[in-house]
Image (tube, rainbow over all chains, first blue to last red):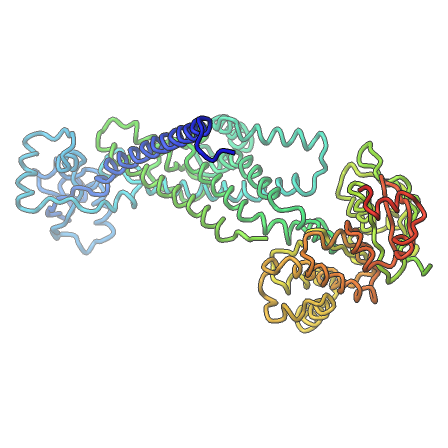
Length: 385
Length: 253
């Protein structure tokens, strides 16, 4: 026996190195794409966290209550957000004690002023550019933290547009998806895996469930439209219609992951319980389900995260709409984060670009935290035997 | 022969189309250890699992014949499998404690069967079971630690404690020592010797020495047939059949 490296061994080692190199290249490429994507989104979305404001004297009086434009002096009317001024009469109604006074306060500037300050493409006339430059010297213009982005709903005026209504819509939809898809999905999987006899019928059901998981999601939208809206009369664009539709889409994923988690529970545990005289239900409820729980949770969260990022089926049930006000209940018109992103991405005004990127960042961080939670739950609840 | 606790009459068993047991007739005496021996695939484990109807879980398994426990047919339609398994307990080949605490492992079955209420009653029951399985001394200070953290031999004794906590009449053991080292095996064998004061034990084993050491009766199976059954001493020293002698002396199997 020779212990020296012979040509055949050399070839084997070379093949091993080559294979490793391929794998590393693939991984680096994937990582590079990811980093590029994140860097692009963060650099584009970050400016949206700041919004231009101008320090102006606001006049609270009957004239300005009748004509909101008159609340500020004439030269400022073109650079102060009209949408913001429009809210002043209501403000005055709520605070009658302010009537007849002047207040120096920071008010929202137009989107063009905002973009001009951030050095981005804008349509601000040179006259107003000079005005802004002067105000800047007098420290009467600033870029402040954009709380409005989180506290306001969608708007046709870019400086007023925020994600609040979309976030609340997403929460409603996701909640409905969860309470419909999880119990039905988990119970279906438990029945199929632990109780159902293995016959033609259950095999057909199994094949169909696997098929459903692979169906393009837009078809679920059509199904949702046909069943929930047309047949059961759920209001169009409502969180109820959207949640139920996404629940349909998430069901197969929940069923498949739950079955996999149940299959991973060793049969010796079932035998032990049966051998002690536990009934089938007791065996499942006391022993099998707790052991399968980490897997079920992980699968469900990943299914929900997928539902949260889904847009296509919601397009069909009418959630891709201009919804400025957050829905008050599940029957009111609502939109969701990905739909909001889609709507903004299609806007022609450039100021929406950074808002689109910022909304994508919000969606991504929510999805990322959901997936992190899934990993944590699996690690935390995992039991060894 | 003593009073039979469990008797099997012309038991035939099929897995789908293939017949695994060809009409077995045998009776197991009360408070004795009976060893079932034979080469792999001879049907001894299958037979053992017929005795607490564990084979019910296999959909294509089909059974004919009678198994009597104290004269009652356990395959009669009115028999409740769950009840039956409280009378006939089972210890498996690989120790399979629940991934719960030692206490919970033992207390689980008495609780679901309503044998004791949580509290002092249950504590006492758990202690008695653990004492009977001679594992009390080793675990009394860590009853709340997981049963799966014990060594293999301790896990198997915990499984025995868990089984006797239900107070069965018969304990089935399916190669209880095959996953254990010689020292752990010796402890289990010692334990079985004590347990037969109280329980009827039917055990499948691959070790001739083990069968010779601890069983009162031995049944030799081959190809789904019961070849020979009798006192262990007789089977190992003067077997009637040539096949039995060949197997015991190691000429085949």
